[in-house]
Amino acid sequence: MNKIRIIPGKFLVELEGRRIYFTKKQYDIINLLYSDPEKIWLKEEIMNSVWPDVIVTDKSLVVAICQIRKKTFKNFIVNTRNVGYRINLEKNQIA
Image 1 (cartoon, rainbow, N blue to C red):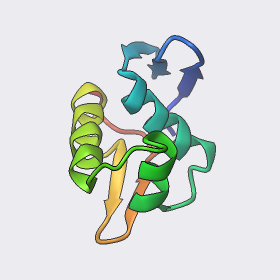
Image 2 (cartoon, rainbow, N blue to C red):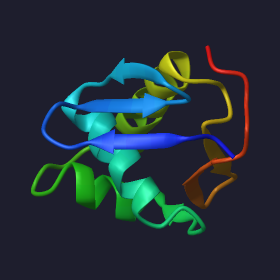
Image 3 (tube, rainbow, N blue to C red):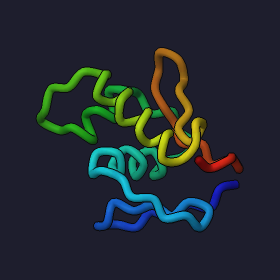
Image 4 (cartoon, rainbow, N blue to C red):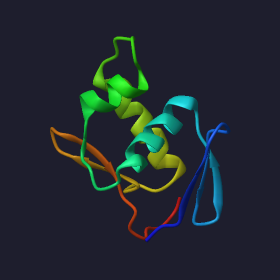
């Protein structure tokens, strides 16, 4: 299992001892998914939580997820086709 520590207020995540800084939106996505790691979060749930009171397309979410994967590893956030996303806490190769 990956050791992950979310550090509030700094947009910082420690993953396997590596400190990774994220944008606010990226951090908010990770924080949300990590809040219930077994749950598959619907795209709409994520967008409503991360972009409240703003109309965004799922393209914004896809871009943010892609950027998170580049900073961590490809399967850090797993896509459940046509449903949503969940965080993957299994041991993986970090980018």
